[in-house]
Length: 226
Image (cartoon, rainbow, N blue to C red; front, top):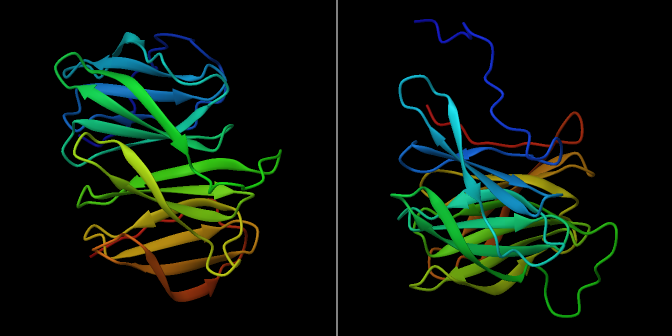
């Protein structure tokens, strides 16, 4: 009734004991997915609807060596998913079998523009799909940008822009979007501020509308509507 934990957690598997930064259910809630950077895969689980316990459901193969999937986001149609790959600063699109609860066939594209410097300071952080399904956004630390991708009918991606706000974006560890897809809020961890961008519904590009300082370096940002 209260939503509290009444039994010890069930430790079903230790496929990798670190570098899992996110768990995400599919749109049906029947399957759970855990991207893991060091193992360069996504661990998949079946969720028991009665007990909530997890059963291992395989791993996703096909990521390029050294990609390092960190976060995952679903296309609103539920047929595709996308990962931001922390180590390589790339993005992968995957196809989804909702009956088997399995992702497959990752196709990977750069999250940084041609000629961008990659070093120990550049790393992918977060990924979001626009509610229209037309655009995917990814944040890049070090390069300090938000990547904008267009989505083709097969769910595959083309990089169309990298928004830097004139160099003001600074370690965008996290960013969020309002449910209508009109505005994006970017948390700049190393400059202790948040930026608000308006999203162009035609091409997905961003126009800065506001900026506010925060008490400390923000590592997460979200939008709440009442």
